[in-house]
Length: 59
Length: 247
Image (cartoon, rainbow over all chains, first blue to last red; front, side):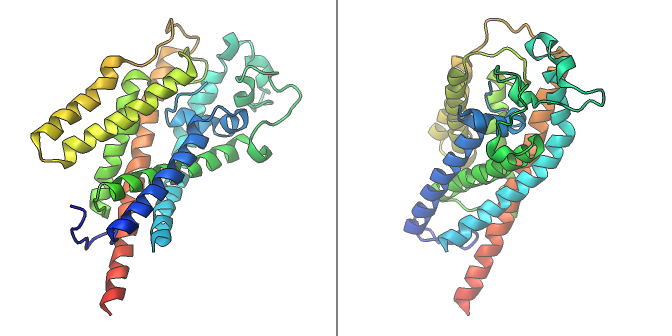
């Protein structure tokens, strides 16, 4: 599966795909943690309406 | 090339975040502001609003249980107002969810196009919003809730298990994969989300129901836009790369 040729989107080699995927996973998790889950008061207050709107557990 | 492709992914997320802001302000924020009147037993209703209905202190601040903001201090990042805070948060959530969806597509060896992107978005909405909503429906301020950390752990586990389960059911042909998918989707619901001792709430039930339904509808909109745009952008990117290589 990993070696099949990808002619449509994400035309990457296996190693590129791993690097890009892991980078996306790391940065994406960091962003979602900060906006949606962090208990820091400042982050909570800034993202308050967004947290409720997206159904993140809040308060 | 990796950086350029991830930028295309982030661009899709930012656009979805901007569009979400409009829908959110129109359909959800009025309900949140309405519910905040009932916070602290409704005692703050008078002090929080001017005759024109403008909030003197930010309800986000007031409901934190601190000094109700009578000193007028702003506890948001960079001291921005409530609306700007929501825009910032929506951009961050848009980029964040875009990157996470791209990570799943990349690490599972799949591709995404404008057409399949909408389906990827719908699948993500099921995992991130609809299935967790069985245990923890999108809630308004002033509604009773169990311990925050316990709910966050259940929510994260449910999103991860549901996502894996939906992927196995939708993308793998094997019988065992589909069976495992069913188990993964059902397990968090059988365990059950942390619930408050009582669901008694000062927030009217109709308001809570309207909010839960609207929150699910607007997030579905967000994910369909996000998935579709991500597919569109990466498809175009791939076409350019292919023609560059051919020439």
